[in-house]
Length: 474
Ligand SMILES: [Zn+2]
Image (cartoon, rainbow, N blue to C red; front, side, top):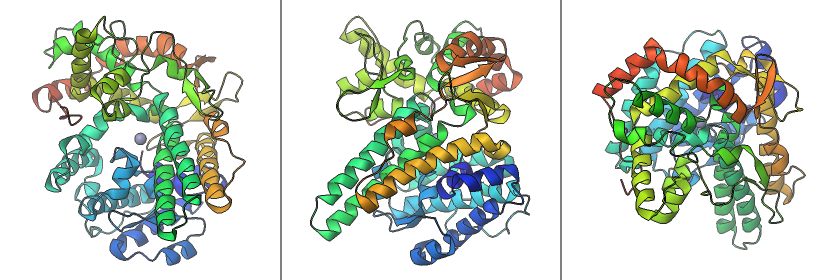
């Protein structure tokens, strides 16, 4: 999902609905492509005033580390490539520019294709990598070329693209809900803190940090509306680990994966996260429900970036009778995340549901609508419109706070828009029930057995078994 983030982060809901009804005729996609082309033409000398005048409603900002100008819609894309808002803000131009220009080039192509326009000329955008022109192989090319770019720029191994992807279970519900909330609320706090600062430069720096944080957050909001992101990535990987353990295939790290079944490690996928409860601290923040004696699970990105070894282990959700058992389980957890084979199963389901869509609702009583996803968002006006509604509200709250210091849009109100039910055979199920009663069986009888899944597994087993060290301790 890339150009979808850009569209959701750039346009208002009415325009998104109109584009879904008529991608070629609405003009939105062509305008988005033209905007990216204008930004990519001379990326070091973007005139912010001119961009805002030519594209009303589009917000821009200058990133402090690189000095590059990006739009908020572009910021919404970047969490697929960077772990934290500060990494986006502080990235040096020699690393960010090739990523930004490649993302622009690829999105220009996809937007034009979706709008029924001919592909752009053959000339590469300044600084872009070659992969956007690879057609069906662009995604594979992206992995290799960005990994190489990272090593060329001296980016630590665990912050290079394949490792960022390995930790990205936080882009899938229910973890994605809290990752949005965490950074959206952090942005609100930063705006509040900026208001108390007298020095103009210092104040503006804080406000920029807030905007980067808010733009980073909205990526996860947008992911939460994509059909392929309603699968619980960790749980699917655990099911696959179990399925592989029962197979006769050669599997790298077989023993370690086999010890990470849902039965052996029931908390890794954040079961309590499906039941948000008020934090009870006077804010409208929601926290995952937690049964007594269970660890405060976080998504793998948050778990592995925690400050101390103890917090990392706790956040992973591994269980064990004593410290040494938990240490062993945590080492396996890291191997599991780095396993390209285990990761590939989630990719199969992600692709399937984005392509096929799901009928969803927010809450048991919410109205049902069809949600599409990566590469297919505009196939349904209602699904795209709901995502755009939530994205617009989130941006509205931040704009209100920046301009007036207050907003009527609570974060709870936005959180409650996230789809958390799926219709299966006419029956509306909450996400955990859908996973248990439908998805699990379908994985065993279909997804894991598919020829394409088997070929990917065999290929990865002999080529790239591990995605790399996932954190400084690795
Ligand atoms: Zn994502």
